[in-house]
Amino acid sequence: KNRGKIMKLAAVIVAGGSGKRFGAAKPKQFLILNKKPVFEWSIKAFKKLKECTDIILVVPQDRIDEMLKYKKQYGIEVVAGGKERFDSVKNGLKAVGKDIDLVAVHDAARPLITPEIIKNVMKAAYENGAAIAAVNSKDSVKFSKSGTKITKSLDRKNIWYAQTPQIFKKEIIEKAYAGRISASTTDDAQLVEKKGVKSTLVFASYENFKITEQTDFLLAQAILKKRGE
Image (cartoon, rainbow, N blue to C red; front, side, top):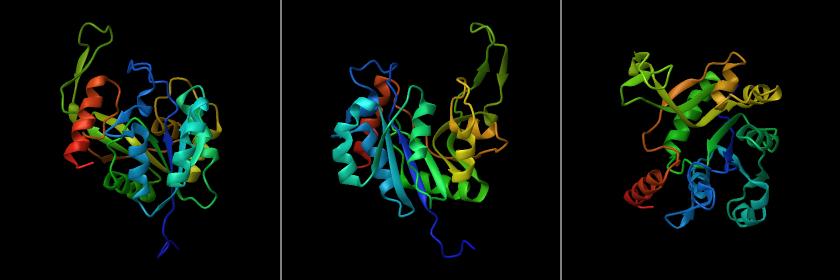
């Protein structure tokens, strides 16, 4: 029945965090990176996909007004976030249109996302219900119970770092967000996992990192420059 039908993707871009770890005066997702605020790079990447018909930017309540120009420029929805990341995603999900097939959740602090990565994750989510961008570990991985001594070494072949976008069939992510969400949940894949849905890992790129420290910011500047952006 899906022949010839273009699947419709909604992107929930989460820019609601306070970015306490980064240590700048304003949250990192609003800092200017190569002449554009960090969050705008993600909007640009999703806008390049014809499948992406809805973009919902989730920002802190006090930034709603300054986002109106982006709302106009890109034709996106802007909604207020909540206390935790999950409250923000939940608010974003409420703005997703009825006719959407897939929902992508993406961290605004990952400005180096590309349309290619989004497409690959989207394809896997369409086939399997849930998929996430990820990379496997380049380093030897140690597990430590005490935090000072190695308890055991893990096989790095089995260790993956979750990134975003994390893309789900709409009904799967909506169901996952319908219940109570425990504070220990770190990403959406974990949430759908609790509902018995295993996400497919899609190798993305080591460049699709999250800006958490000053060095990440400098690296992102260099990569965008190299890409001619």
